[in-house]
Image (cartoon, rainbow, N blue to C red; front, top):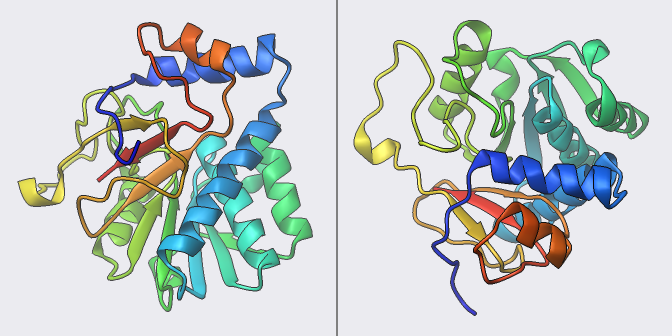
Length: 236
């Protein structure tokens, strides 16, 4: 197969994948998070091989945890990578907290978000908000999203571009007008390896969630014939 399937999946189905994998199959949540970060980093190196200065913007949940994993891997690979946070890392819990601690151990520079912190980056990683977003974004979170959108560098978004509703594609950022050519959500679930995503614009957003056993995938996503070894959420 050389192209992505057109089947669509809702955020609830993705959460069910994680629940079954963790609670019923005994796969640690941090293992899934690590696989996601590793696959995202592999794609980053394939798609942007010349990128040397990475800025990862992290929120306070598991999406931010994915970002901490990517930052750690980038640092260990010898790239200049630093994290800008929108949530105090001291308040993190669960898998995201482990990811933060591992990033600290890898000596990744971590600082509160400031627009000036984006300067000099040749690639941004959006790890602010994932598929669970349901309410409009305001305040510092909105300002960070606006700063990312205004930055000249490409952006790799983990899960989904922050500010979009995963099921409807609605833009949940208050008091902001987007032109149609800049907001064309197309959500696709892929059964292909991470190296072959669909590209329909200058910015690409990929979030692999790791190896999902066939039975788990069929239970969480009934009616879908193909069972992936890797599941990818792509939005352009």
